Length: 328
Ligand code: PBG
Image 1 (tube, rainbow, N blue to C red):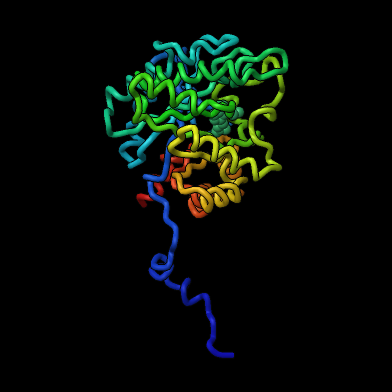
Image 2 (image 1 turned 180 degrees about the vertical axis):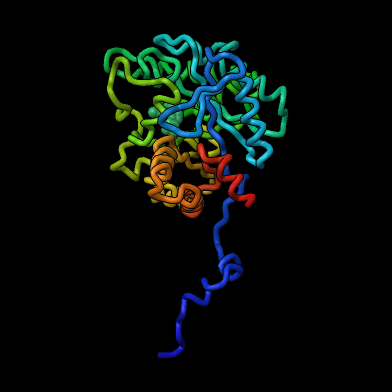
C-alpha cells in the first residue's frame, strides 16, 4: 500500500523531534509556592516531611529562595503564611504586621520589581478550627468571610503584593476583593482566582506544610470546593469569577483534572493557570526516592502535559528544579 506512512520519520532524529515539537516549557510558565512561618528562628528553615525538598521558611531563607527562583527566570512566587497565633476568625491573616505583609516587604526590599509576589488569600492557615471561613457548628459562614478576605488582600497589596489569589472558594469573594482594592486605589492589582478548585485528596501533604487540619466543624471541604464528579460547574465558576473581575483563572489540582483545563481553555480566552498541588508533587518524589520512576523525567512530563492541556502558568513545587533542568 502506497504512500507508506512511517511515523518514525518524525521521531528518529532528535533535531527533527525538536522541529516538530508543538509544546514547550519555559521558566516563565512557572510559579513557585513558598511557605513562611512566623515563629521559626530567623535564618532557619524547617523541612516538610511529606514534601521532600520543600521547607517552611523564616523570612531570611524565604528571601534567599525567592532570589534563587528569580535568578532561574521564574517570574513569580506565591506565598503561604503560618502564623504563631490562630483564632476563630483568622485575625493573623489580616494583621498588617502579620507574617505575610512582613515577608512581602522583605522580598520587595531585596528584589523590587524583578519578581512578582502573589499571595494566597484564605483563612484556613489562620483559624484554630482549620476552615477557610468562620464557622457556626457544622456551617461554613460564606458571607461573613468576604470582608476578611478583602482586608487580608488589602494588607498584602499595601505591603507590595502584585497578585492576589483567593483560594477559599466562597461565593462572591472576587467581587468583594476587587471592590475593596479598587476603592483603596489599587486598580492595577491582578486577581488570580482559584476559580475551579476541587475538594481533593491530593492536598494531603499541604496540611503538614501549612499546619492546618480540621479541629472543629466539617471534616472536609465538600460544601464549598468542587465535587470531582462535576464538570459543568467549572464553567459557571469561571464565568462568575471573570464577571466579578478575576484576571487569571486557576484550576486545581492539575494532573487529575487535565480534561477540565482543556475544556476551560477551549471555552474561555482569559489566561489559565493550573496548580500542581502538594500530593501530585509528593507522589512523584516518593516514587523517585524508591527508584520506581525517573524523578526528573516524571516531573518534566507531568509539567509538559499540563501545558499541553492548555495552562500557560503552572504553580508547582518543582518550579526551581524544573527551571534548572530546562537549563541543561
Ligand atoms: C488554602 C489552600 C489549600 C491549598 C492551596 N491553598 C488547601 C485547601 O484548600 O484545602 C492546597 C495546595 C496544595 O495542596 O499544594 N485554602
